[in-house]
Image (cartoon, rainbow, N blue to C red):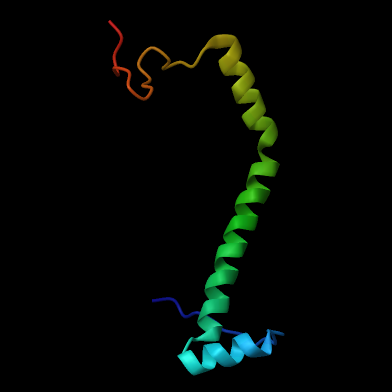
Length: 84
């Protein structure tokens, strides 16, 4: 099992919310880490989409010119999966 390295950091948070979290037993570090993990994943996804947008445009253009190679067997909601 891999060891996760943790690092202390300083955050500035709303005092009342922080007091409420402490009173309710909310693990602020765990919540912050989960939110940060999600934000990093979303930022990476956005960056990946931006870095690859020309490839997506090229693929879309190719499909418009040549049709999708599986167009005859692709399904749409309410349609049969195989055309006769």
